[in-house]
Amino acid sequence: MSGPPRANDAWDKQGERGSLGWIRFIVWGIRALGYRGLHLVVAPTALYFTLFGGTARQASLDYLTRLRAVTGDPRPPGWLDVYRHVHDFAECILDRLSLWSGSIDEFAFELEGVEHLEKALADGRGAFLVGAHVGSFDMLRGIALDNDIPVNVIMYSANAEKINDAFETLDPGSKVRLIHADPNSTSIGFEVGACLSRGEFVATLADRVPSENDERVRRARFLGHETALPEGPFLLPLVLGVPCVLVVAIRTGPRAYRVHIEPIGDGERVPRAEREPELVRRVGVFVDHLERFCRAHPTQWFNFYDFWGPGRKADDVSNTDTGATVV
Image 1 (cartoon, rainbow, N blue to C red):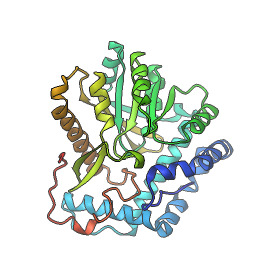
Image 2 (image 1 turned 180 degrees about the vertical axis):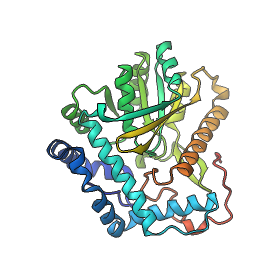
Image 3 (image 1 turned 135 degrees about the vertical axis):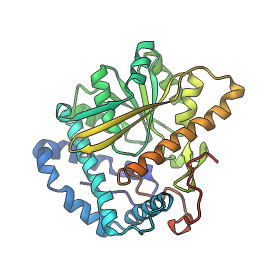
């Protein structure tokens, strides 16, 4: 089982390097060993990367230190806290493998706010789903199957075609498709628009900025410090006039998830002159929700890299503003 990426690498480059290995492991491991068999390697794998993960371990400590600072916990995190963080990451990966293999009937989902998606389906205009690296965004597969509607996931990877092939191999009936987001191309807007016009869902993660497209960002204060978030996940649904909905699936046990579905934008068309304040509001709503989930589930946010950027280490978090507001 692969461990967290190294914190000093661009996160999207790591995904490109690891895709082929992941595909081989997914196809072989889940079929040969099954869920219970693979679960035996979760604890030792988490321990290995806790002890020898280097910069990924430092990224976990950085995040946990910031989180404790804004929650008023005076205890500095230690290696056991990092182990729990990495262990939860490994558990979610195992659930993803199980889900991709077509074992969705063995999962338990508790949906909160599903009426927001039902309304979008009833209106026939689709919806733009925004998530984060909290819990497992792959649980959208359950929503897609339950509603018998395609979910198109925007993915920043040069290997989207290869991963699509893996999905097809493991689960030919999957309703989840990948859209490769090329930062150097403007065609993604047309592709997203076509999916939404068919009444489908389009989904993406909004808490990482692609390394080749780091100019289209919004600065926001998250866990006491300013960081960068991608602008596209909030701007696209605003321009296209479709609902923007937050979807976060929190792991509550083995193959058990609580899916939180909350509206960020209702899909009403906004005049161009009013888009900027509305865009600021939407980013602020997203960051507030993200911090709330991190506070409630501290070991289920999985960004094992230098999220706040060089020079913004956790030692500097004292006396910071605890608000998660756009700056």
